[in-house]
Each structure stands twice: as structure tokens, then as C-alpha cells.
Image 1 (cartoon, rainbow, N blue to C red):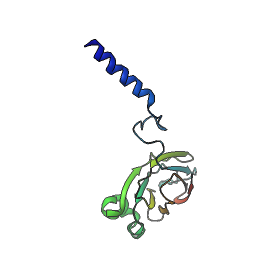
Image 2 (spheres, rainbow, N blue to C red):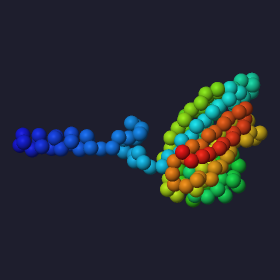
Image 3 (tube, rainbow, N blue to C red):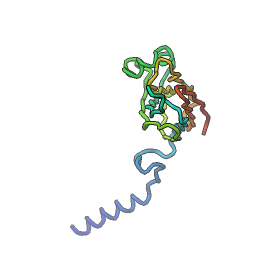
Image 4 (spheres, one colour):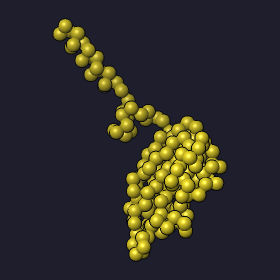
Length: 163
């Protein structure tokens, strides 16, 4: 019996030595060669002014989409309140990024869904009626890409490139 336990434990330890290292220690189950979106967010110090004119954090949502039509035709508040209903069958996945603080720069890594043709971004500015708070990016294919978001006042702009 003791020999079986030692054999099993040895096999487990040896199999652990042969596994590929993960790029993200929190995602130990993910494939390190899988395509990813690296999303760089650069926030100016004046983003999302509140009623007193002081800058405030914002919420950023990332949507991977099969098609851009529903995203383009739907206004921000409909997507914000009911993204699944508004984007319907075009929605492949969504990710809420951590709050973006004024004057800060952050990066997030998101796995690319194989069916993704477009990436839609919405930013929840307090003055959403006047804000440029929604952009769409046509994916370059099923490989890693860098999306750069710039937040300035109540405006969102985005560029993308192959990594």
C-alpha cells in the first residue's frame, strides 16, 4: 500500500514539473499561446468631471462581438442598462475593467474569443448624454492585439494594432 501512495505522489510531482508556465499566475489553466487583447487605458487628470467640476473615476466595459451593427445602432444608455438585450446574438463576451482613476494608466489582458470580429468599448461618464462614450474596433484577426484607450474629459478615443 505504501508503495502505491509513493508511486502516485511521485507521478503527481513529476507531472507538475512538465507543465508549461502560465503568463498569468492567476490563470494557471489558460493556454499561454492563445491570442489576447492587451487593453491600455490612459486617463487624463480631468476625466469624468462631477457636478463640482472635479475629476472622478469611470467604469469601462469591453464587449467582444460577432458583428458591429447592433453596437453601432444602440445608444450608450441602452447598452449600459441591458447589454445582453441590446447586443443580442452579436455579444460573445463582456468584461468590466477595474475603475479607471483620473491621471492614471492601466493595462488589462483579455483572451480573444475565436469568433470575435469587433471589440466595442463603453465608458460610463457621469454626463453620458454629452460624452463621446462608445467606440468600436474591427479586430485584425485571431491573434494578439493591443488596444489603446485615451480618456480625456468626457471623451473616449481608441486605436489598435497587432502585438
